Image 1 (cartoon, each protein chain N blue to C red):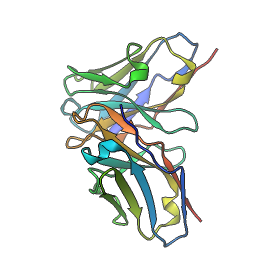
Image 2: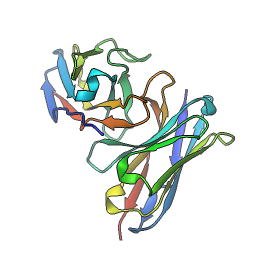
Image 3: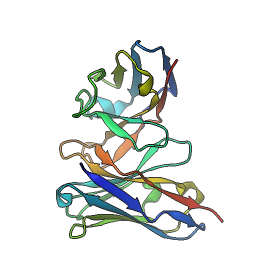
Length: 119
Length: 108
């Protein structure tokens, strides 16, 4: 079965940076779009970013544009999210997800990594 | 950008039918997807492209579309179905996504 394992979360001060990683296995990583979705404590899901199979095109929610960068390394079966200029409102569990090959939806999710932005 | 609107909560007794709605103008042209999220767990896709059930999802889960409103129906609700449910859609390119605010399903 598809496996997605996030890492890199933690406590960071406002204005700081953090890089999340997602290790993918048990599927052909280079054939799928990938996505980051976040969930603030006690709140709903919020889509953050998508990246195409070869990394050539990237898409972001307006609230993170210019601060976050999604990337991938298909040779390492890994997805990344570089987060800069972090704000308190970025505090959330960040999920890595595989985008279904035939639909604009996430068919497999990791267990998430918690990012806390606080002084 | 656009919005998807869900009721905050729905309550049903075991064995009854639960219906959770999701409304948004974009749903006339774009597919909707539904996720189930149990406490402390990652979401699970339960309905794709308005009405399709992914492999492994019980038959009691179904979806429908009537223009600007899509509905997730859970027939014969079981205690294990108590969870948060989210609808999701995308723009015409499929690249930009939006989630509804989520609906907490309580099984009485």
